[in-house]
Image (cartoon, rainbow, N blue to C red):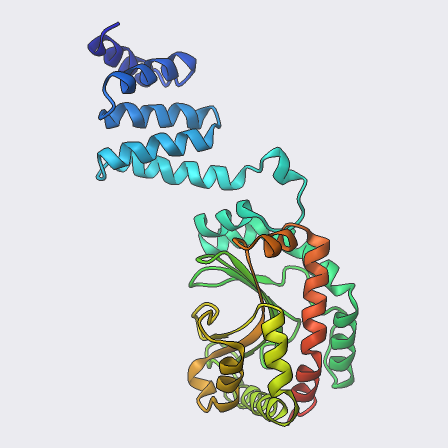
Length: 323
């Protein structure tokens, strides 16, 4: 068939919603003869999508959009392909128990609440393993001695979406305490593990002004503890364990060296305005050693336990200074 005949056949197949092998062959023949035909590339992308060949579909649709950036059909279809690929694990991915490129693709592709729901089971399995580790038991016992309720560090369904993108999980009852927390983010794809202070006034708690004052006092005690005995030790720990601070809704302060990060923690005098201050370990998907930890739930749980245990003396000193 010549090009006009191929185009007519491709349109007939599309109108019949037939995206089978013939449609693939016809559209491949069209783009071979007319590589600038964005409509044929779009149809080819749809065919590959229907056959669950997601990578080939993405390649075809990207080609279509490179030829016609205003194509809403190609744009919408590309978004749908990316979402479906993120939700469909490969055979190799099904053997993994932690967080891989697939899980971070879901986090990036889905709305925050949808991503949280899609990843909830995997996160719950991780926090179950963390709850069984030694550091969690020590934190729970310290909280119970102070009259706090709860027999587990993290409760079921403890993860929640972040409006700005990402997922986070905090230890039970920790809204107005120094918080042991986990977080999942994209751009860059990473997981944070460590200790944070939520100094924001947001929320519906009728006592939030007094509670906010309490968490600010916790942070001031945290600062004094660092100044007295942890300045060098915390910097060394951060340097050896991929440690960074986080301020507000920004990502990890990757450009800040550990000594400078500790100095900022020591000299911060506007914690209430910052609203969220965090220090801990960050694991990045694009770093092979970190990726190996992220994809294995048992190894990741041990990493969480190691991090919480390292920061536990700082948390204990701040937490036991309530009031």
